[in-house]
Length: 280
Image 1 (tube, rainbow, N blue to C red):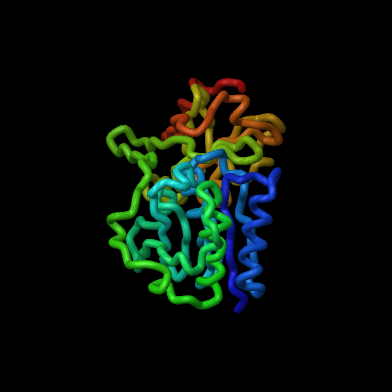
Image 2 (cartoon, rainbow, N blue to C red; image 1 turned 90 degrees about the vertical axis):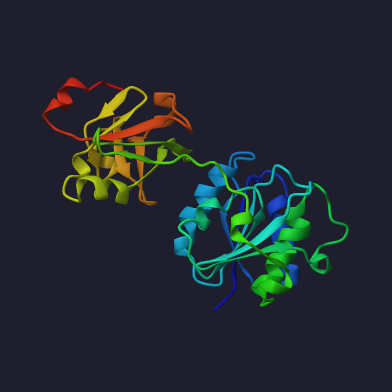
């Protein structure tokens, strides 16, 4: 099987940075298969990067090497870590980006990357993606054992982000969460997973739940964007399994003036819904 290396950055595509990283990887390991997850992470948004990489992991085979470079403290004394989890490898700055991959705890190995012999020379203090991440990923994908890239770390010593938690309030019979990502279409992606709703109300009632966000109450959860008229508000479980609020063929984030951090609630549906309906 070909060795896959994915790249996730906040570099954008205006400059040569992404292409140069690929050039370094292919110079060291021409057999690599390179996959761009995204280079449009919001600038220095580590939380967004954490959710993106966590959502993508299930769709890659064992042995995949993931490079995640969203690195506000590049050039400082922050360490670079290599995580092995679920049979895949993750190279990232130790700034919390890998938080979601550390929970729930499975079989995990962590290493502090320290292998100057592999780095490009001289190492720039502003472009570790080119000079460290790319050559180390190429070496790892070509078969270098992780233990040769640095000393082993205790997983509990790795930095973690303060990520928003979902609150299941059984007394009030509701679930509270928040928007954690706004996608390219303006859909508001929450941290409330489908399984959390199923566990509270059961599969049969899942779609009859009401969703509240930015003063709007949505009567039910739909199973397709096209289930409502154009420019109508809807709630839906997206392809990642998380609850989204969308505006059919329009931008929900702009319409609701909502963003990451906007609160969202899931409540029981029923005949009282007519009291809460509002036009968007």
